[in-house]
Image 1 (tube, rainbow, N blue to C red):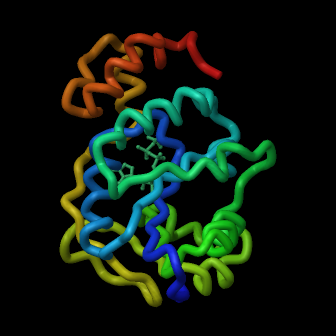
Image 2 (image 1 turned 180 degrees about the vertical axis):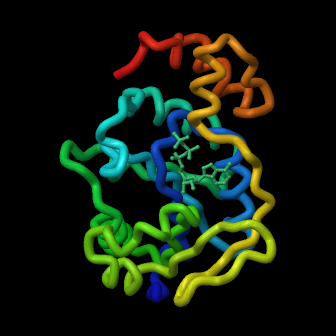
Length: 196
Ligand code: ATP
């Protein structure tokens, strides 16, 4: 479990964020409050190991959308550690980096779907030593061994849904922050041509 350290309690919320949406933000704010975090950092992945077959929007755009989405929340931060790397990023390396930066305890927020794949991640036991795993689930969900379950009002929004809606010319208002919607429009993202 996470070690107490100088900078304070840190929550790490990794994902592709292509794009970030209200479901992510609500879950993150809920976790920040419930876990008493000094800061919750979004960790956009550079080349997500499980998504290498699909096309992911350029890091520059995903980071810019994260920045405008979290700008008004002093409890939120952005971790560029994974996005700045050229090689695939592994969670265990990110945790070591954040610990070396003086954060602790560290909480790793993961979706219930990702938890099932934890055994296949690099150094799963070290991950459990460096961080407390927090799974966000619907109220009443069964807790898994050694994992903290955080109840959260889940909103059925996904980035896939946002991308498909833009492609189809459908509204994404109230599914993403207005500043994110404006960014998508300005840069012509998700129309099937402005990728990479
Ligand atoms: P995609 O549809 O492209 O797979 P996504 O919406 O699932 O994207 P990711 O960036 O892949 O977004 O997700 C990052 C993390 O956010 C994952 O742990 C995922 O479980 C979680 N997450 C995704 N959507 C929601 C939501 N609506 N509410 C809470 N957590 C979510």
